[in-house]
Length: 372
Image (cartoon, rainbow, N blue to C red; front, side, top):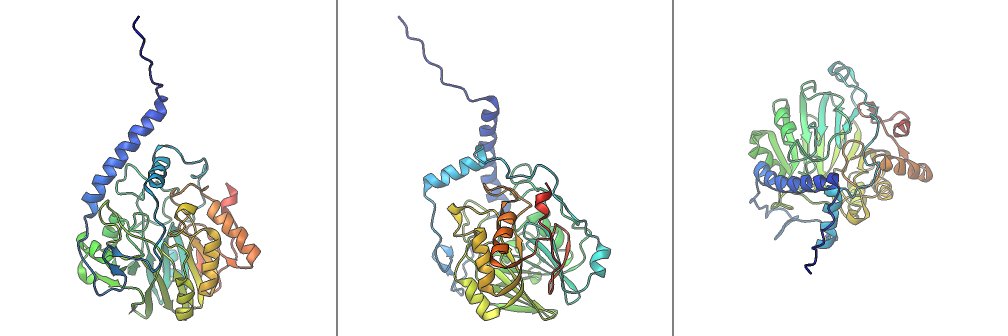
């Protein structure tokens, strides 16, 4: 008697579709990475940070094994993420106009989303890690989508004295945004290698200044120092650590500001604080973290300790509330850091997106994320 062949269980249609889309996204993204960004073959032997495998950290992060890496991507792409990583209602955004910017006093700061911050210093405007696209991704039909629109459009932004870039990841360096800003920006300040990427994108070389760690430059009375961070770089499958990553110290109008970019917690914060601090205000990463990658993205308690190491007076948490990039709840970074800061008597300032902030003496803010 012929034995009937058992049929394998068929995944529900929705799950099958997610798997097909996930596979397509991975394949398309791999091609897009290589096609859109290109691979850097430039070496930087003059930099102490550059080695046989590209740029490197002072302390090497713990590598993820292939099993852990595979599970991580599977969870990201196929549906292993828990509920709550995306807000269910619109988050508050305060519109910013050109008139308001022109009338704002020096020493005013506007958080525009994720790690994009607009500062008015010495009568001019300076912008960090600008990402204005709909998605932080090599393609605009897939990838992490914004929770909110920017509070001001690229066209409405005033002329910029400089754009300051921390590294080349998609949630910090957006190709289309850079191309638009090139027409209204005098200088792009970048870590080594990132500027070469901008030039390949069409930014005139004379608009680009590339700095190694501890290099500094003064522009119109504002001094910028590229300082160490604990991270990595790469936009393709083939260019990991081909460019440098950095934090930045900004000094102007008697103010000292620290901008972390992306980083894990490391001893470098104490060194930066001793050499260039204390700081009136620290813009510190707090978001898109996970214990599996805490060597390159700080956990909230580490963000608080970094602020103390730097000798900061006020702390503005960034790298949150705009993109879904991890497995924690979307408001968890703000809530956790807010709670820890109250326990540790640290002044945390959490403006809504677009809300003006006085750097020297920031006004008290409310935990706006609780209004959801």
